[in-house]
Image 1 (spheres, rainbow, N blue to C red):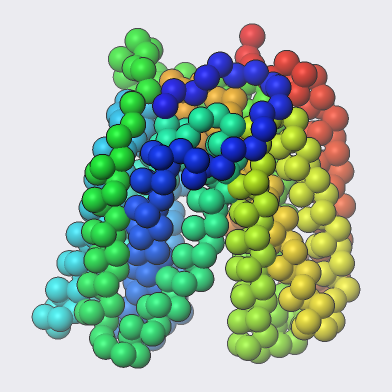
Image 2 (cartoon, rainbow, N blue to C red; image 1 turned 90 degrees about the vertical axis):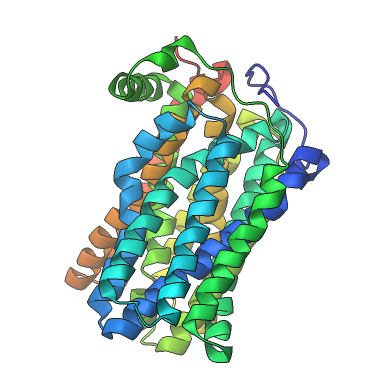
Length: 417
């Protein structure tokens, strides 16, 4: 259903499941996301099985993620030109096809490193398209006041699948074989297609400006994003969250080994705590209404809490304490990330939605990689007890400054002149 006019007034919470269209779509999201994480796990496992090289495991992981940093803006333009439901049908079907091909090659004993690299790159390309298309579909499924709820539930599905996918993959591998595991991933994604096919949504109204070329549309999207005060504010908060909470989560192996002097069991405990926290964070946002002020306050508060938790983590020497802090940090980071996405969804014009959300995805995905490299290098030079408080202080100050700057934008909705 079309998004109603954008005001800055507070809208009461309304569950996304109150919308029949969203209820129809939800099983598709569950099965396709679980299948995607299962496939990612299997590709990483295959890289190790074929090469026993951490370098090649990293290369395969990079091929599944790096294309999004380059291709997302282009697919954002495509998203603004198509019915997002149809785009999702294609990307999910392609991922099922890739998984099925991998299973057949493994069964035929033809699966080698070259085939693995091609399939990983192909998954990376389809993921680059899938993410902005999926984000653009959600506002067509629910009314405006249900957007935070829908986005929160999406975060819960994503983070739950991130835990269950590898666990399911490991269990299947112990019970059967890689070929069957790839087949199961393909099956999960194929099961997602019928409910998505039956999900009927009205595509956004096509604007005349969408008839121009890709380059002109990309420039128009960049100008719109740069000129929209509230979207600039949201992007700033997203960057802070990515460089603080998300970066620390990315560095959990180093936190486990360096800060806690732990082993693989220590890392498993921290990872489980982070996963549980992220699920709870998505649930919290799913209970919010569609008002700008409430979401902006939640976003800023989550970032301040993240800074305090990172500061406390610097002095944690006990696994139980560190696990509790990591769980809370993951919850706060998920709340901040999900709230920022909800705000972007609420204020963006429909004709620019795909392009803006593709840029948001680049910031949300790319900044943690940059932050992890920067923080990791500083930790090797200094130490966690020195670096973590520094990051926390800088991000807390930046959050306060952005929140104060955003006062006028909250009053007028932040629309460009």
